[in-house]
Image 1 (cartoon, rainbow, N blue to C red):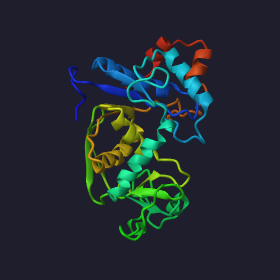
Image 2: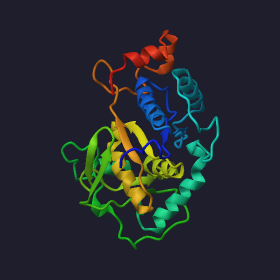
Image 3: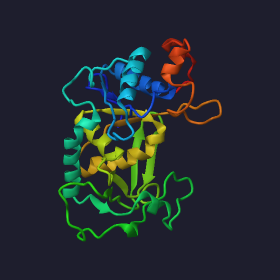
Image 4: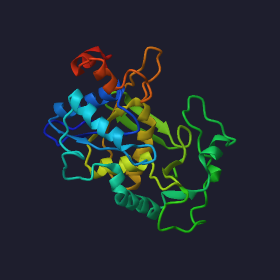
Length: 286
């Protein structure tokens, strides 16, 4: 799916997670998202992805808004400016996320799983060469009618049953044609955690659909997540957005930037006297 033509209604988004201070890599990916929204004459949405309240802190949210404004970002909808698809703070959208969980449950796309992350780490099946994750063993799946549906998801992990052997294919606006095989490149994935927190794959797909996002611009480390999210879109009968995955920015040693990377947080760079214009001029081409 190509990005919408200028006469169509383009809707892009910035979706930071306030678990630390934004760094230069975030800024470049977000800047690409903003530039694409402007190029298509569309709208840019800011959504705060603070679903995991144990890790996300209000002080990081406040700092993030300040840093984004300083860098030159301007959004059309968001937690501070409102919009037709509020709330733009993910932690306030739990009722909606629960409804999506119920729809997946009703369609028998998901199942309860007593196996923990530690269990998976010790699973007898090792990752395939080049895999970034250990594949959830298919023999750990319960039979479809072996468990009783519940009213709430809390207290146990809930996993999406992937179609083993199927190639999930999609075009990417930067990386070109992509294909991942379910059951080989990724296995049954968590959509709701036992601690009551909905997982990234569920909430991002649900909120992007609800906010009518037409193109998702994010880092290339999330290409595999796109395959998972396409399965959620398909299960719910939704049309996926277009995808554009940006290269990751790395430090002098070749390591990808992280929120703990010293000296490259936007506020540290600002305190050192750097201007947004200087930073944009100095970063490597995407």
